[in-house]
Amino acid sequence: MRLSSDEMVFWQSGFLKLNGTIVFTWALMLVLALGSMLVTRRLSTGLERSRWQSLLEIIVTSIEQQIEDVGLRQPETYIGFLGTLFLFVALASLCTVIPGYEPPTGSLSTTAALALCVFVAVPFFGIRQQGLGGYLKSYMEPTLVMLPFNIISELSRTLALAVRLFGNMMSGTMIIAILLTITPFIFPIAMSALGLLTGMVQAYIFSILAAVYIASATQARDPKPKPAATG
Amino acid sequence: MDSMTLIAMASIATAGLTIALGSIGPALGEGRAVATALSSLAQQPDSAATITRTLFVGLAMIESIAIYCFVVSMILIFANPFWNHVIAQAAGK
Image 1 (cartoon, rainbow over the protein chains, first blue to last red):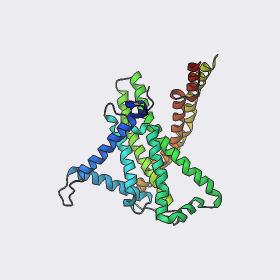
Image 2 (cartoon, rainbow over the protein chains, first blue to last red):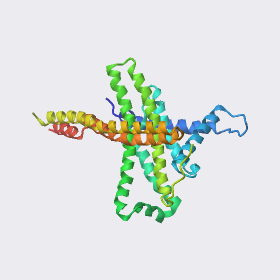
Image 3 (cartoon, chains in turn cyan, orange):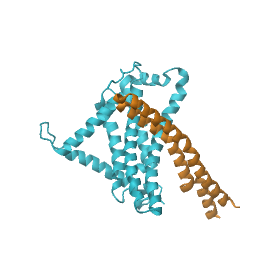
Image 4 (tube, each protein chain N blue to C red):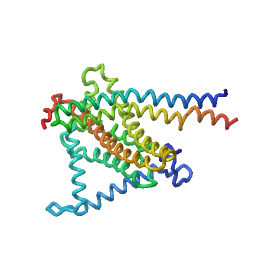
């Protein structure tokens, strides 16, 4: 039984190996980039809009709304990073309806790479927002005693991000594979429907957690909380 | 009993124990979280969006404990380092 799409080798020449994870990641990147290029080639601001433009507008505005709800003031600064994370993970799990496809997020290398992106992006946005000194000072936020714990939490939450996404995606694929050997008729379909839902929730959670981490790095300076949302 | 049998037995039994014991805690925790979220949704339906978002993020946090256990048991069964070591030694003999 294959544990991940890493072991699905398409082409190999010496050290270079083209496994399923890389191929499917490239395919997803191509679909996302080409798709949005084709849609944004002729945008209109009038009342007549193509249906694809409406789709992209819905996606972009709802991602912006979610980012703003988390507490990041200017969502257009962060949507390039957070929106890409969400779209990639969501499309990776949505494409599991295609036969022969395996989600590249079901491999620990992909999720570790995504989590490392978040790990780098948090200090990047933090330093850009409040300067190097201000960001470093946020590590000893309540007191100096908390310094090692803050550093540990920085590392452990990166590990948690990677393993959470990997575990969810891998378990979905594995449950379907196991069910195919026991009850190959109806149940795999039900489980793959559940897998689609889990994939969407995980994509949402991955990007929301990244947004929360960035928000905590950029706004450590002003401790006054936002007024509670009413309605 | 040679070491191969011992390692196989220990790995399989530990994999089962890991996922069995490790899913008890997250199950109880998720149940409590959902129950509390439902009662606060019933009290304040206006802030449904905030409660739901916080609930999802919290559930993901709790669930990741169970996912860790699952990953560990999968490693024990499918990618066991000790098992691979013994196989490599037997092949080298």
